[in-house]
Image (tube, rainbow, N blue to C red; front, side, top):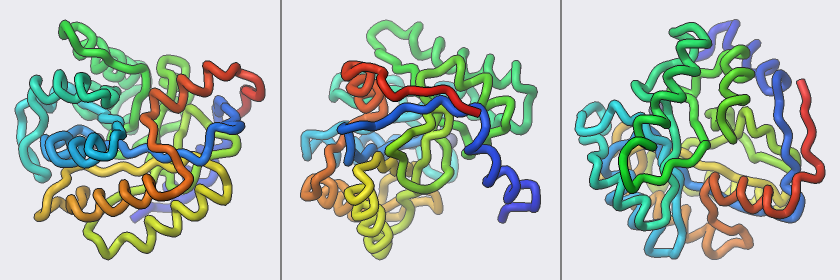
Length: 256
Ligand SMILES: [Zn+2]
């Protein structure tokens, strides 16, 4: 539950320190992202995407490697190599899964950079410059500082991105629970198509007995199938940003 300050932040944070990118003709597009990440995100979730010829974005907190938590076993090094080989995107999520609201901003930026560097130092791993905030916790000063250090920063502010996208605060929607959540997915897909926008989902573990922050294989499979059958393309965050950059930066503007 959000406190009074949380509600205030929800209103003003999207307005501050923005780095706008116009989607132009790129949409409608959808991205499936996985945070932290539990092994099943890759072994089950990654496989579902691969089966459809698609790829996902894995926001990885490198220090969680070989550990275990509420969502089950976390990734191992082989998973990172395999997911890169499969064409998925390896992206950043700080080194130790730290909240930007529990440390100073310089310490937080250091965590972000160290997380990316730790993965970059492993031979064979290709790491993008895209980032997601652990716990979805974003402070104004972190938004400003990390926005300068990374190509994009994903939040858990909900909604559909576009036609103007704030690269410093990408909106994303939880893909949690089971198949009963498909009506909400359907609504988001419809909105994204109408708006020719960019829809981003996030989840953690993908297993039948999922954690409160994960989903069933059936829900992910249905959402991916719906995306395939829609007018949307399934792209990673890396590919959306790269395709946009390849088309030229017209329409980009600084704001806030
Ligand atoms: Zn996380």
